[in-house]
Length: 88
Image (tube, rainbow, N blue to C red; front, side, top):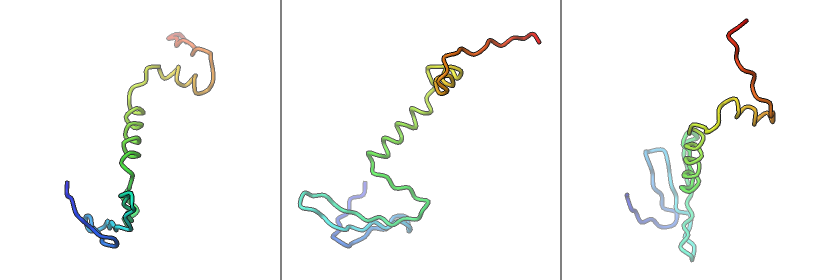
């Protein structure tokens, strides 16, 4: 971890395209930062990013119910799917 000291209105440049500016420091120690970055760079607070990652893992995990049952739940149907027959 790189640790730097900056004063109000001083900046950091990351990878030549992201600029972080110290906007202020409150009495309670809270630091206000301004971030300028290109549109393709996503910026999240760490706690929100961790929540998004957890939801992505949950969504990618195999479901405990089958696809037919899940579809029935989504459609609000209680009917069971018809059995597949090899006869025509």
